[in-house]
Amino acid sequence: MILITIVREGESIDKALKKCKKKFDKTRVLKEFREKQQYVKPSEGRRNEILRAKYREKMRSKNDE
Image 1: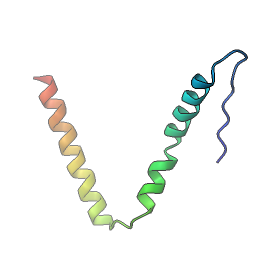
Image 2 (image 1 turned 90 degrees about the horizontal axis):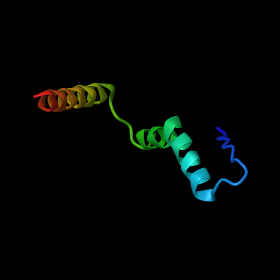
Image 3 (image 1 turned 90 degrees about the vertical axis):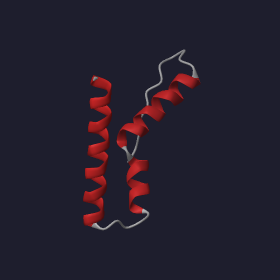
Image 4 (image 1 turned 30 degrees about the horizontal axis):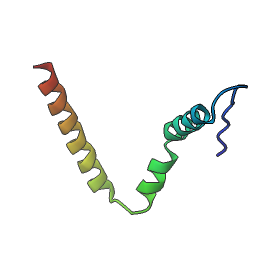
């Protein structure tokens, strides 16, 4: 996959790097790479997703109060 970042004339290198990092994060390449490093059984994956969903719901309800 090729990430193309257009840098405008006079734009600082820091801003260009920030744009590049943002694009890289949005593609989720690093996350997929880390997930594929170790095999996770499908049942374990579903269990983890359910636990994450319960945690998110708990945090949402706590913030609503």
